[in-house]
Length: 484
Image 1 (tube, helix red, strand yellow):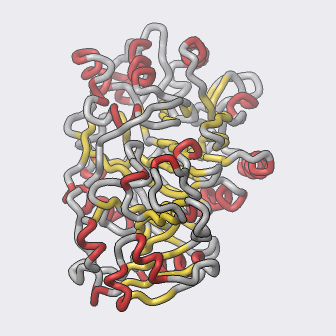
Image 2: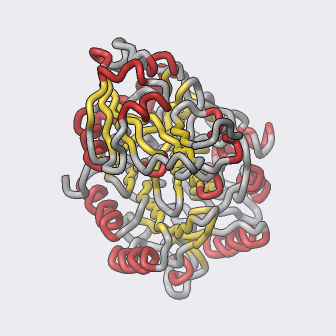
């Protein structure tokens, strides 16, 4: 079950049983007898696995209802010679007869992706092709994780007694972890605005707000400008000409938003004055933005941010044809996508040690799988070196395309917008939480939400979550190489 419990803050499902064989990956040197060291391992599965968690007893007994035949495959790194010693350390020595060797790590991960088999591997060797599986509700990628009570830990020491909570892990350091939360469409207009007027600015996020606030870096794609006097006529609303009232900004501020994407189609709906006013409000609130600006040069400028040693660069643009709120050299608005320029910027940012995150206001395509244009244009940005390419525009959750070092998500669906009853799919969405360690993308945790009225979202039930993920994953691709 998706866990809605969170711990530290910074800058900002009942398990569905499947029948897969488990792969175990061992890595790193087990310390000499004179040293004390501990290494953290994680349980994971291919990204398109529906399960979120497992009971420790199912792992220790290799429950045949979970693992066909009760088999366990251990992938050993070249530096590990004593398999039984490792199995004893994590409580699996009684299952030694059912364990076979598998090496090296990168080949074992590839085998997991190809076969659907589960995998245990060192925390720092995770990559986004794998989904971290919680054990008894605990997970190394959650904020409330206690590494010293984690069962998949290898401890080595020559001393008879030792306080392990004083021994650092060789491959896990919470101070090297950052999470980046990407969200879909926010448009504080129409029915959303009416609810906010009646129940307050925080009404849309009553149920999901704590999760959003838990992010180290929270991205919000706010498509609509604020206007000094926001009074929309029936004709304007019928023609999708939108503005937001200034007080709605409190929602973004109260969520602890780190950065706002402003390359949306509606950014110029109320003219240049509203664009300038919106930018002034963001700047006064100390809220950075990207993807739009006072002119094209500002719209094309990346937003740079660092957290726990991880360096991020946000870039965004509008991928539709010219005419959607386009900025120019002298006019404010959204930056239209200049793909050669973006590819150049991505390569330069990578060379400077930044991890480029690209969000696109692209075609509003009401399908789970992308069309050819989307696949080509998202793909070229990923090929240039973007670690994430995410579609901010989609009003329903779309497919993924994942390789060892990058994630493409063609669309997340609505975060705060009043389309709950437009299509069944527009009442569903994801919030994508990307986990980085030591300046590398290691995992993606997909939260699933549903709208319960025209303004407010809540968490899906386990059955709803499984149904949505099953549909998305059926159209998704997980690759062992970029060209696979």
